[in-house]
Image 1: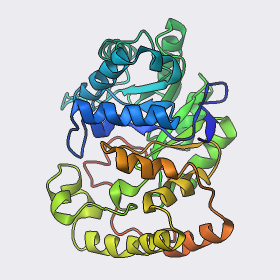
Image 2: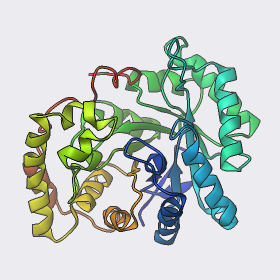
Image 3: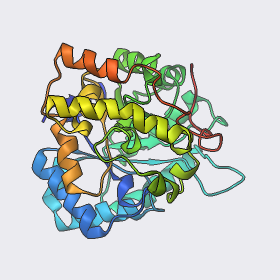
Image 4: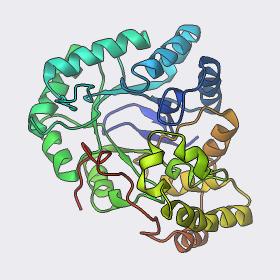
Length: 330
């Protein structure tokens, strides 16, 4: 398993993490048994980073991870554990970065997880009622309290990262990044590298488009997030399946799972890029982990770029409602 450092001075972790939204998230809940099986398989494969959030299943994902740690107490010292807060269910204030709110949310997460600290605590959505420096100051106080070892932000612009970093070291920035979403290459990948910040890439297999078994249109229409997402609405859905068929054909030619190619491609973007795919299926996990075991040749990387050149995807990655919160910077 390839490794990377979580932030400029953080622990060495696997350059691959498990995103635990799939345990209780946008694509249907997993059972406790399925989730524990995935975590067991991650541990056996040398995966040492778990990523969750307080809003995933309204705390259910954290509770599932907590129950796994309770059943496997030695695993806690082996894993770098991350969670997030800052998204609320208050329709009048969807995002809240008040210092008191962040600390209270972290306290609740620690209780669900059954731990006394996390290794990384993110602001899930930046609240523009505060300056980046002010939010970073609040996060620094959480480090000082011992409740988290490091802090990060999700879905922010490079300029926000620079401002926050002037107040407190930012160990990680989480952003959607894959062969189908390459906007981070327009500044975020570079700024993270410059500052020593880990770029944690969620949805690294393009919400299943970059796999051997993409969501059917019917299944996509049965899930709250994808049924209104531009890339899963016709005619974009059919166009995206047709486009990604080229990657599946290339994967067959190379003799690797399509998801493995997508993960290996991301890891090739830089030692500081850490993909966190989510799954509730151990067989799919094995395909994803395979991406950490292969090194793509320059010829293979060129063929991947020919199959899916920058800008190939049909439709925006979010609809108007889904875009509320993430910072656009280009």
